[in-house]
Image: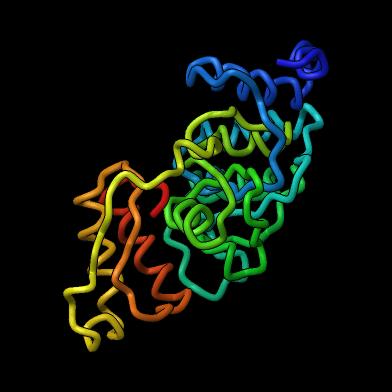
Length: 243
């Protein structure tokens, strides 16, 4: 860490806790340094248990605020009340507290797993820290920004510090394709159908695993919705962060 980062980590507030989390993650990942990021997309605001709520509230109590633009993935509750809420108390109250904590941390209340279709589109070549598997694939592959798959609750720690470990897909060498996924032998009528891209994405994910590949043999741009479907299916059936 730089002298400034060390000084922040030595504190006792919420920002210091976030910096220590990012720094320790970098150490475990053998990252040589921390790098500045332009934005985050937070997956950790979805309630899975009380510990996540208590963690977020501790950051709020420590005065932490996000340092970069930070959108939120889906939450556990519909705050507009237009659909049935199945959570019972006390889980319902804890889920609401979690969503409120992330609002207090300064995150945008986007509540979507596709922030790129809601105006959050980082510039090509910029480093970001995004969670949510389909968003990570789209960010790397379509937008050309650089992110690893940031899980709960490293994502909010990166947002607060404005930094991320320098490893994985932040590094140009690791973004080079290792294999080719050629669809040129498929019929044009299939490739323009609605079901083609989720089916191909599912196959791609199973075949590729965690590797970075390149898709060839596509005669024309299939559209962002098709790319979204392909990436989401690939990330669900495999663990690929880019294509």
